[in-house]
Length: 117
Image 1 (cartoon, helix red, strand yellow):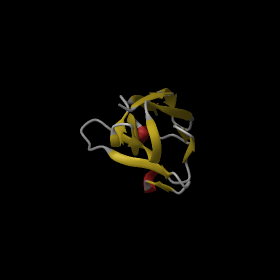
Image 2: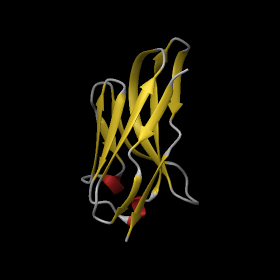
Image 3: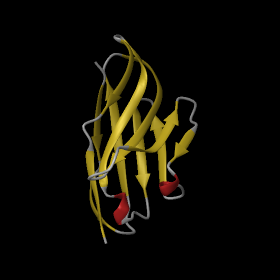
């Protein structure tokens, strides 16, 4: 069982910054990719940013130039700058890889990010 624990969400004014963290734990052999998704009320969950084991990144167009994803071993970070009210959502961490139980794709419990105007 691979678990992901997120932290760093909160309330911030527009133009402000937040840094999210997500740590994976469990019997992990390898992680091929880690990413951040978000879901706003009444909307579908969408990809925000993803980083591969080789360091390749991809971002949603709406966050390019404002958000930066990085990774250190089993922890992934999302630095969010110049936040906008439309960034308000629950942010979820995801990790894909292989562990003692075979291949996995695990999700965190989510952390709320609220940007006030």
